[in-house]
Length: 167
Image (cartoon, rainbow, N blue to C red; front, side, top):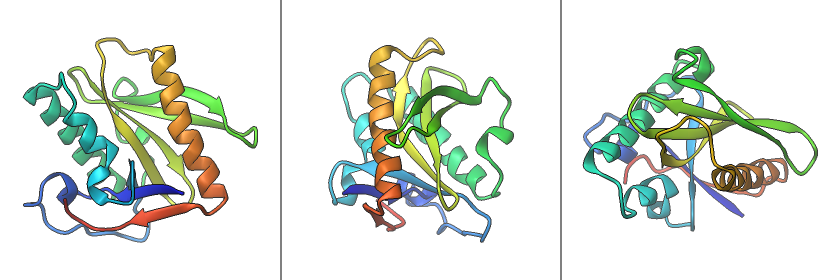
């Protein structure tokens, strides 16, 4: 069972107001390692060795911008220029459908990777610090694995959603 946690501004900054969904809004989710909402991989990756405070702020800022832009209901790539948001990789999932992995970069070395799911959902992997645009083979494999798991779990209704709005 895949565990996804709803990402709202309050997950990253408890001082933010509660999320205001609209019927056309995209809902943004992050992958959890367990059913514990604190096991959100996005936040856990920021606590790994090597993340500077500047890079952490950039990752959190990019996540907040992604969440805010998702509220509009428009596709994320239509709200940024092509250098900031474009597809980074595509791969075939278990049922042979081709899916795209999108990259959001708002400057600096932090990039956020995500995929579009069914029912106006967006799933975010974790931030990656990179100085170049292209993904390494290892990064591609890791992202393909997590997003492949998401698409298979989505098709088989094997996702547990955690909807809490704060840390």
